[in-house]
Length: 249
Length: 316
Ligand SMILES: Cc1cc2nc3c(=O)[nH]c(=O)nc-3n(C[C@H](O)[C@H](O)[C@H](O)COP(=O)(O)OP(=O)(O)OC[C@H]3O[C@@H](n4cnc5c(N)ncnc54)[C@H](O)[C@@H]3O)c2cc1C
Image: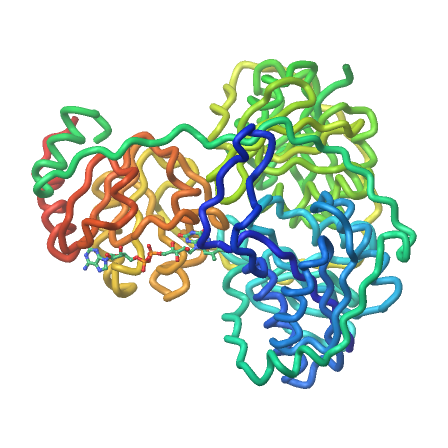
């Protein structure tokens, strides 16, 4: 069984980002970039499936600027076998990413595609579902547990009321939620080994895919700031304030 | 302009309140609004949709394979209907987030997630980077496929309308996914996203037993119980209690955070609450920067005191 796993390069989750001075976009020049945390979980899941003998090959793919090679090398160090970068300009919209991934799927014929459920920059939470739609496959979005069979996979999903389990025909698309696993720390020898693994670069043209944008960002701004309030001495004072001043209890 | 289609989230018998917030977003776009209720024996939810004032028409698609709201099957139905609409809206709940990208891809259009503002028929505001920034985006797609953040739009009225209910044929099932089972968290308390008061705990609660302190206070206040990711990961609380960037987004009148540090990913889910109370032993904890009232102290001392004070409180 072959698994395709996707990784996006995003501003590190610990970094605070600001609008550009002219408010036209997000300022990400000189910001520390990392692998999207949900994608780390996706890669970890693929690697565990290989370690448990359920998968034979893991291909990591990223779509974006040439520096995305860094996150692909991380995926290789975690245990992916080879990597593909589809080099584009600035980040394409989720639909365009899904179309590129569909073309990659047609080329590589994986039995399972695992993506992070959302990227923490745009917070769109779309690409996996879109890819599944374009392929006509089943989707296990927001997965917290994945059990792989021969013809089918059982996916437990985090939903608003609790958990839901679906059975998907293979091939299928799964998107990783936070509790699917805890990604491993990459060890130095593996980072060195990863440098020797195959990383192929393609262009959208190589995949016969034209990227059309349908969204224009007009403005990026910080939301109104909330002011810090006051400290109260104890529970009695708190309850008095909540009852008499703001009347919420 | 063509009409707007709102996809109802429901349990077949009744509507989920997020549907009403989505209707309200549709109203601020302007135009004739239709509601699609796709389910199994969903006449109850269709009738409830028809009672929403100002709805022109309710479409009801009833079929066994819509019983579990599988995105694979619903998306085919909605994409078929969507061609007659300028906008298709659903709540940005796990239901809508699972479904709408699939609809958009079938229509070959982009999708807008989690809108919090409507500037015009093609321009919307949405949070990015865990809500630390707001982007205003213009969408040139012929059909705008959108999910709506409930906390940003007041719920539309639920009674008084008399829209006609029209039956639409179900689409054939895709046959790639089937429902196996559900484990829903059982609770007598109000639903997190609808509660007027939420009492929430983090890693500082120390254990699932620690959460009992919060639950007692929640019951005094008629509140829902929430949690940070760290508390859920540690097994103190079930996953559907999680509030934040990747959990639930809430804006209650009162949010009480105990043993929660206030990471940006957590704030993303609760910073629009009307009044925020923080209880934390670390006076440097970032949660205090947005709290209206803070108590610096050990929650194992403060929470029992709070319980006692609330117990003494005469009815409002
Ligand atoms: C991709 C991604 C998505 C995420 N999504 C979410 C999300 O949706 N929701 C979310 O909440 N987090 C999310 N996180 C995690 C987030 O970054 C924080 O790690 C998390 O919110 C921390 O939870 P916490 O405040 O409970 O724990 P901590 O940060 O460990 O804070 C515990 C607090 O408890 C206090 N404390 C300890 N003992 C006591 C005591 N006895 N009395 C009083 N105070 C005490 C401490 O002073 C501390 O401030 C996400 C992270 C990533 C990377």
